Image (tube, rainbow, N blue to C red; front, side, top):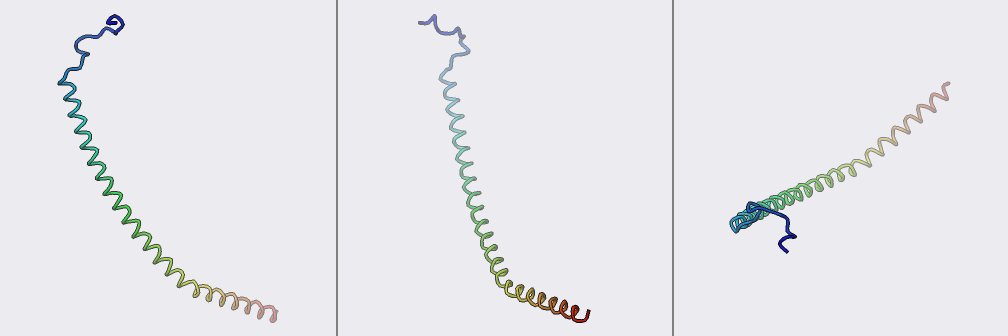
Amino acid sequence: MMELLPPVGWPDVARRSDLVAVRGEMAELRGEMAEVRGEMAELRAELKGELAELRGEIGRLEGRITAQLPKLVAANVTSVVAVAGLVLAAVRLG
């Protein structure tokens, strides 16, 4: 059975101290990942707040536009009637 194993030297064998070091590194990485998750949660909350503000501002702008719409329609109708009157006057004179 030992003959089937590839030939390796003692430097290729892991020691307990190597495993302890790897466990320590993994624990550090877990801690860093927890910090990153916390930062991501903060950014997500900040983004949600800004989106809510943007939605509110869009709603206010929509209200202002809706309030101005009747005035715009009235001004356009008045302009169309005035131009039509000028065209009719020009036709009668010409």
